[in-house]
Length: 198
Image (cartoon, rainbow, N blue to C red; front, side, top):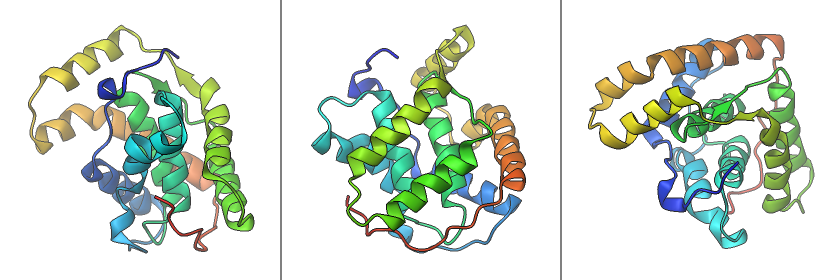
């Protein structure tokens, strides 16, 4: 995966993340927050916090940081791991890459959460590296249609309703994939994790 300058990377917004969480808990789960202030934690980790620990992080490392934070810092009472998957997939989508949410995704996110909970000396960079190694073979290079999408993202001034319409096919396809996997692999790890280290 080619290196991208930090200014070339597009990040999800908290509105996107909240929407993805609403979708995954509407499929299965309960609404509610553990800490509303943590809704932007994944974005913050991907955009800024990782740069304090990793020199010049590329897209994959930033995606690993995003996924790590949403899995482990528990902004919501339920659906954190599924929201992490959908937000990570969207992060890749925004940046012209495909992300294949594979059959092992629910088990992997559960493993990440358990490792963080059960190991109080776990280091975020080690966990992020573990996530990056898992992500790498699941990320596809951009094609022509993704380049057109990137052009639209960079050069279109849509309001929220316009973006909802433009992103509907991606949201529908991705949310159906997550729903299918959540019923095949129901996971329950909702104990609180380490406090946020952001």
